[in-house]
Amino acid sequence: MSQIEDVLRRAMAAAAHTVTSADIASAVRELEEVRPARPQRLVLPALATVAVVLIAIVITIVPGLLSRGPRPAASPRREPLIQQPQPGFFAALPASGGAIQIRSAFTGRLIAVVAPPAPGEFFSGVAATGVDSQTLLVAVERKTGSPCKTWLFQLRLSVTGQPGALRPAEVPYLDGILPNRAFTATQDGSAIAFADYCQGSRNVEIDRLHTGVSINWFTAAGDQVDDISLSSDGATLGLSGYEYAGSGPGAKPGTSSVRLRPATAVLHASSANTPIDGQGIVVGRLGAAALSPDGKTLYLCIRQGRLDVLSSYDVAAKALRRKVASWAAGGCSFALDPAGHYALVAAAGGRLARLDMATGTLTTLPVSGVPSSAVLAW
Amino acid sequence: MTEAGPGHHRYGSAVEVADAAEHSSEPAHLPGSGASLDRQLISEIYREHGLDLVRVALLLVGDKATAEDVVQDAFIGLVRGLHRLADTDKALAYLHVSVINGCRSVHRTRRRASLRRIQPEPAVWSAESAVMAREDSRLALQAVSRLPARAREILALRYYLDMPDQEIAAVLKVSRGTVSSTASRALASLAQVLREQL
Image 1 (tube, rainbow over the protein chains, first blue to last red):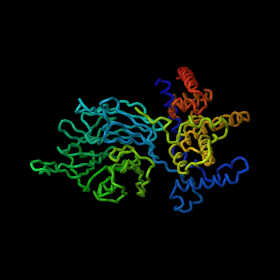
Image 2 (cartoon, rainbow over the protein chains, first blue to last red; image 1 turned 180 degrees about the horizontal axis):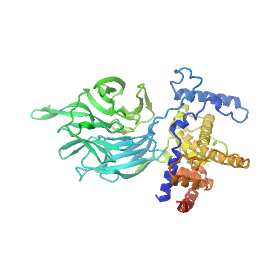
Image 3 (cartoon, one colour; image 1 turned 90 degrees about the vertical axis):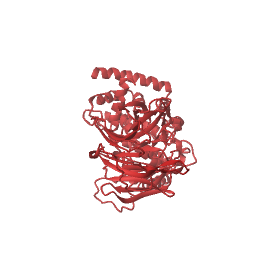
Image 4 (tube, each protein chain N blue to C red; image 1 turned 45 degrees about the horizontal axis):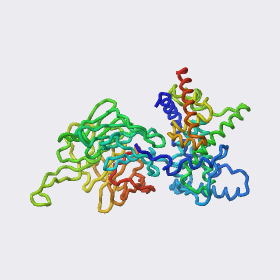
């Protein structure tokens, strides 16, 4: 891209972002503000149709509008008619790592499929940063030849969700691989966290990209960290996975098996350079875990029979706070938006749903093709 | 990288709808008849694309309030034409065409208003507005605002919405070659202006 094109893109983005979601909340105005159509024979039926449709739109978009009761007469600002979960796009990384899907967070629509930078490479992690100017951080590994190296790339999404080229990230590589795709970043992109492995050494780490400071915890041989999340300030890390619980006789005579128990932990930067001690908030078959932006709540998905159940836990009290929602068992995979208001859920059968974290309402999006085991980054 | 191209867009490509939209001051005329557009789909389109449409309108008309009006008119046009929209896949393409037409209408109205010495809101790239922090960005958009209308539209669709040239051609109802050559001339002109200013 030429320099002038670069200047132009930057300038247009700067001007465009002077308009925000809040500015257009009242763009679909109340019925009385709609200008009548030009006089024509069917003007009254047409206006009636417009009225019905606009009222239906308002009721559909804001289900709680009518139940809130009358608005104060002297309200200085109109109620927003349309809520926009942000950011507008998310990434889904299937277990194969062969491609990353970019999808609309509103409809689930597939916007683009991003392939690894070169043949013989696969994606081993994806994390989302930014809200208005979304950028993904993606981790890439080689199938052969580099047992202790993971390359990091930035993938900028346009305002329509179209991905640009993969560009080397600020930290271009990690000295280890991400065996369980446990990789995340803060919304402002200032810190990343991951669980990596290299030659028998297992490690959970937060890297502050602008200062170069790293914070490490050690995991014991046999431990498996499946999912990792950060608070918005990058100071608290939540993880879920399985702890090594010794070996024992296997199902077949003469064999032995590794015993694991589900484990979760919330780690603060002050406890760095210590072994991770699973705090055992829950037992059961664990799926994804995500910290709230303030780091005070840990959301955990647990398989319970034929359901995936998402519950919230008080980090300080290490106690169940409430069950948020449940759905037909899939991969127990979900992703929180940066504000922690909504979650996207990869449900069974490749279906996708949006979950309102406050009300527990699940809205199924009209798409399929999102593997329930996919890692989601929003 | 494999991308789901514009032709695969759920709400459709402008290629399919451009013929329905004459370059008039009215929202684009909706083609077809028969099946009606799902109301839910309109709110979905608004949630997903409303902000982008206002932003691209802002780049063409300069101020936020007018941009919001243009996009609102486009959506009202869509609502009014529900019963005539045969193919819901064409909704977004219709809106793109309608917003461009609306912005052209704004400029025509402003030319008439300027004869009567009525001034619109200052553009976001003007010094009076002072909402853009970077001087080079402000100067770049000032230079863009002095380009011919078609060049401005092509640059906004190409460099803000990342729309492929073929789709731009359909929205603006010109050939793909015209899009390409107009963009090249505009970039050359901008480069020269900015070299002198920066």
